[in-house]
Length: 346
Image (cartoon, rainbow, N blue to C red; front, side, top):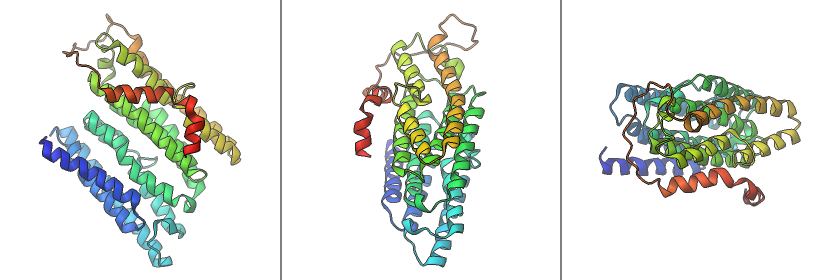
């Protein structure tokens, strides 16, 4: 892709995200979401492969439907209350429509079907954008409207997302699809807590984005798109693969790694809100996610050649790992001890 075009699309992405996050009026929030959608489409379809074109088409249709629902919900609310302010969403029907629109934007169950397909059709760098920065504007809208939303609906969607994200990730062999189901599972954790403690949901999102960025950049660095390719990477970059193992365990939420912090705080908050059964169910369902993270980690670090994979070896130029991957990996692993400081910030 032309560097100037890539620069324009990247700036548009940042602009759209900024407009949505900083807006008070529903129409401005909708405008930001539309700019975002239109900016990411060329980045998804830049390879001109049929899978990429299909992914871009699916993404466009789903996001257009979700944006229309956002507009419809805000107009219904304005019709009944005379308010266009995002924080003044009080009409119950508007709240339900908005919840389904944001679930569609994020890929929460039952609107999750598009996300693994779109991620599988995109390059790894675009997949990273789709999993992190593209989820920030809908999360910001969820944060701003959280007092008005229906707790039962969100809790049900959250538990179903964690369950389906875990179950459907078990049988995958493509790394991008595994990361897509991992994202759906993590969104369940954010959705369950957003009504009771919105700041905690945002903290969870930031840490999830940090760890997912690390995994995507590492996979991009070792060019691993399938588990069979991942099996041959240990000899190319042993240190990077060891760090990938730790990052995946952090993403699974194992102590004493960074990923344990949001899960620990969310379970604590749910218990305070007399939702111990929901906390128990969502904790047990996260074990499904642990299984496929361990599978990824096993393929990356424990299957040493020679082994029985029939995958052809790829050329690998021994280029140095970028400083960004090093910083992100370090943060994905060792932030738990400074959790008191993080808690004072949020």
